[in-house]
Length: 280
Image 1: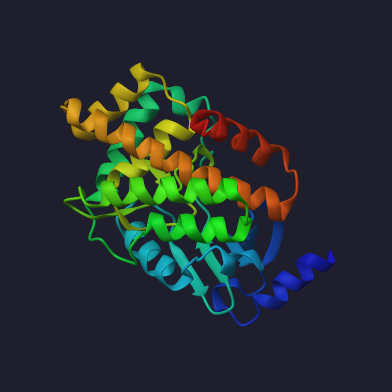
Image 2: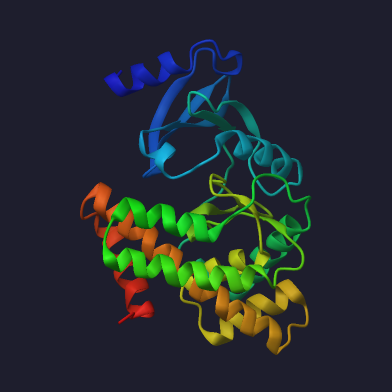
């Protein structure tokens, strides 16, 4: 057993459901945490362990645990098995199914399935903290510390204030709907809820559309499945939230590139976002 596997089992000691757990493999992680696939008692689990970056990203692990309880009961997320927000450890049931690829997001039938799952999510009670794009933009900009980041944060704040004044019905949003966080599991399941918060449902829609660079035809299919009969106002509001997503994503990728080095995936996404923004 490797040193890292030994540390993981030591951290999980005392959790009854994971007694005699066996690490199977390390899963793809993010800048805030590492995740492992475990097996115990004939069942599989995903254990997530925070690293030092988690605190600086403004994540609220207690709120995430409460949200995960609700969305798992709604049948759109894996079951939360155990969590200790203070220690930055979370254990969820493993769900069978493959995470989406970029190609899946360009499949009209898959997009329609996702739209129905998001409609179900956004109809749930708005549990958790409020998503504040202006504060997030300023937090990222202060970590980056460049004039470019300051300009991005100013643009993000101005647009977020305008859109926030137009939000009529706050909803619980996932806020990180990149394809790797979408899983085929009968109905579409969503994983990695660490950015979930109460905000405008259009931001979730914008992440799907903008991050995956959906064509106008695919965007129309997606919105028709979500709204059933969208009009020009829905498309205009989505376009504005796509711009807000670009500002926030640009700041996030700049912060990650600064702290994690020149990771190829981060550099690629950063280049795409900055090209779309093309600020003077």
